[in-house]
Structures are given as C-alpha cells and as structure tokens.
Image 1: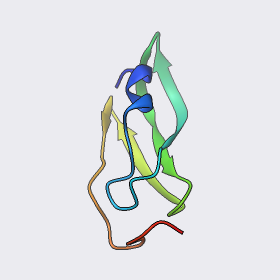
Image 2: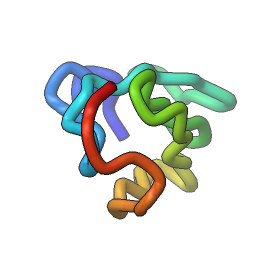
Image 3: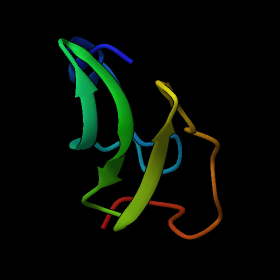
Length: 63
C-alpha cells in the first residue's frame, strides 16, 4: 500500500481519518503495518501490502 493513500482513507464504520503505523516498508510502499481509527480505537491490519478495511460492529457512530 502506498503511504500517500492514507490521506484519502477513512474508517468504514465511523468515517474518521485513519492513522498509519508501519512495521515494514520498502520505499514508499507499506508492506506490513496497520491503520488505526482514533474514534473506534480499532486497528485495521496491512498484510503483504494490502489493507483490510472491512467494516466491524465495534463502533457505529463517531464519538
């Protein structure tokens, strides 16, 4: 996943902007890491460069 995508990604549940955590990167490409929703306090994993942004039931509306 390209680092620049973080600017346009939002939590699929609360629609809040996501914060990037990087465990492994190759240049501008995030290979392993996560996207954290500050509203839901939920971490969406990035595995092999692919973010898993499936909605979840833990946060229905912004706080």
